[in-house]
Image (cartoon, rainbow, N blue to C red; front, side):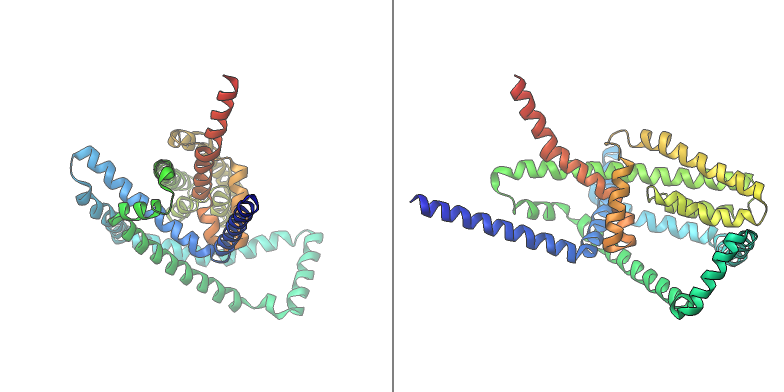
Length: 346
């Protein structure tokens, strides 16, 4: 009897380990699909969360506010493109036209130093030796391909978010059916905590992006940078990415300002550094007061890990995934560990 029981337990353990390994392998091999699905869930939380918030404030049913919350971003974007698209397009084209001139100017400044000049000559020899490194069309075609794939993934995430927002209870109940009955209440509470944390983080991040865009545009306009609007939009969009976003947003602003003079570059650098300090140490703590703060080192580690696995999609979604991991860890491990500690002390 004991031998049969041991054999049964061993079999169950082996099957469980194999299932976990296969599930982990499935996630790793299809990590990009899972990330796109997570992006759809994040957008669905934005739609449904805003609809529920409006329903509480107006006493109007969520079913009425849900399609409005879905159409409102599209309408706002349409109005923005109608009134601001010509200026944005003009500045975007001007920015693209100035980039080669700015890069050539920086290269010319670097070649004044003999060591860097030798490095530039060696780099030219390398590119002449390896034709692939000097082929611009490869880089352009790769960028175009990645852009098309990114747009396709974004459209898929939007469609998934719409289906999830229409009847979220259906998907939540279906997921809970996979959990043993005695753990379903805890699983439901965990899902609610994850939704609340992601909704609060997303709301705080959107508000922070708007503030960063406004501060950047106004600051560059005050410094006399004629491309202030498009650079402010770039700063707002890239501020969604922690750690790396502000640095990426600073690069085009630096290249544009350096054509005017080194003093302008210095002022722009101070402006971007000041905005980053305000966003990191004032705006974000205030806006994200209801959720746990994200450790920058942990977010950076997740960004590097996901970037090596799936590329840019991983970098974009690293922060909300970190929020999700923190909430799940707190709910499933930290609180239980604290409960055991309190029982031991008593």
